[in-house]
Amino acid sequence: MLIVDDIATNRLVARAHLRLLGVATDEAASGEAAVESIRAAPPDMVFLDMNMPGMDGMTTLRQIRKLPSRAARVPVIAMTADATEAHRRKYLEAGLDGYLAKPLTPEAVAEMVARFAPRGDFGRP
Image 1 (tube, rainbow, N blue to C red):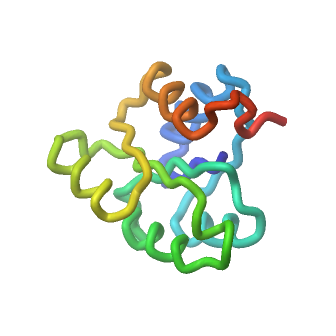
Image 2: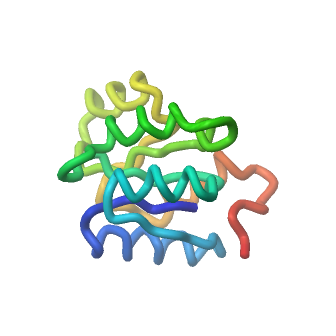
């Protein structure tokens, strides 16, 4: 699982929720770093902040979808403070696989992980 957010505290919160589920995580502090990380070793899923400086979440998503094979198909979940229904629709229509509003809750994170890992073996070390 790759957590992408320019704010370290947000990455820490996501990591804490995921570790409670036993999910192994990696992190990137920018869209550019995320794309390179995914190119080198595609994760099982990506939590992607949509409002980062430089390469924002939408641009990062477009770059991920241009990567070869498995890397382009990784499930990408918006992780954002844009918490309106209009934002949720916009992000899902743009090709994101899921949507999490900040602040993240353990329940919402668990639901998203379960959605993409129904066998219960997701990202385990």
